[in-house]
Image 1 (tube, rainbow, N blue to C red):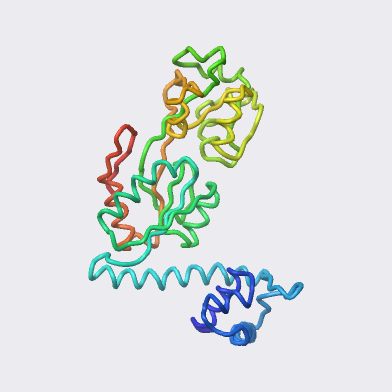
Image 2: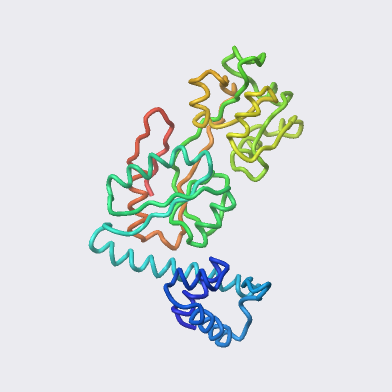
Length: 303
């Protein structure tokens, strides 16, 4: 097995096509087929099944794909270390976050780009489990993740505190109130994120014993869906204050504070532990440490 074979394998696995992999690598399709056959002979296992003339990864192929991602991430990391000797002037910073974090991460990547204009920034969105997987497998360099989402391969730094609010429609009986208690929330028809959402998990942790009798009317997969359902009077939502700024300004939603303390969701900046010495990671952490976001609760912590 060599890097060239592995690069061809990774391209086929990623694109799901020998022809698209050939286009990506600027080689002929027969050359791709030959490299895959040789790699399978060298490994002694079948890496792809050919189903309706399309390659599908076998179990062994999926294992190798995971290793290939990490190998090429390390190759890129080596290049970045060498680049770091001359300063961060070229390359790519890959960031992944959830829907709520996307609101805050803009400040981070904007500040980073001002300091390192030669570095291209690529932002991806995913659910919390996806964020963990992408950072652990080195698909992305850093991610924003709820503090309650743990993984042994992740190093983390506190980044910001995300205040949660209760949202209701303007015609709701609570619309003129400033706050609501946990006991009242337990009896309200709630519209919340799906169970795998870090925001949902944090809410349930903070509500504690009251969680056992929550009246969850709807579980929706996005904050936009929650806002729309609440606007239509379907129930009461609990979301980040940041994601309803536009609706609050327009008067289409009302926000109430939760009377009990502790409903500020801590969000961390996470990266792979093996990359702690990376100049790129160090640069991101330095920007995050010095970042001050107007009107938001940003947590700064020394590494």
